[in-house]
Image 1 (cartoon, rainbow, N blue to C red):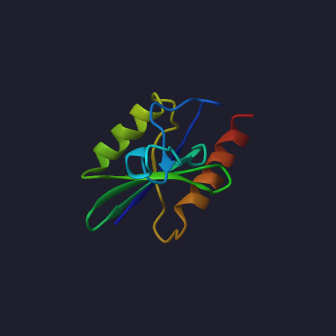
Image 2 (image 1 turned 90 degrees about the vertical axis):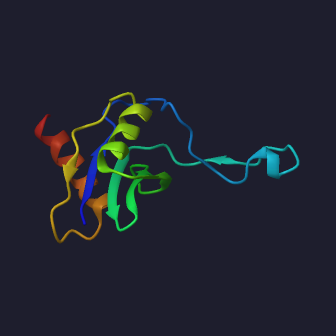
Length: 116
C-alpha cells in the first residue's frame, strides 16, 4: 500500500469545503455546536484495504478532517477541487517512511529552501 503527499501552495486560501467536528444542528435541537477543524496546509492520501483516505493537516500536525475515496484519482480530484488547484505536485512517500505527515513537512521545507 502506498501514501502520497502534497501541500497548499497559496497562503490564506479559503477552501471550497469546510471540515467540521461535531453533530449537525438537526441532532442538537437546532443549535450549531460544531467546531471548525484546523486550517489545512498538508494533505496525505493513504491507500488502505477499503479505499483511499484523504487526510488534511495544519502545518503543526493538527487534524483538519478526512474523507474516503474509492480511488487515488478520486482523492486527488477532491483535493484539487477543495483547494482550487493550489497544490504542489503529489509525491509518493518513500518506502519505509512511517510518518507521511513528517515526510511532507520535510519535503515542503526542502522545496521552499531550494526555491529561495
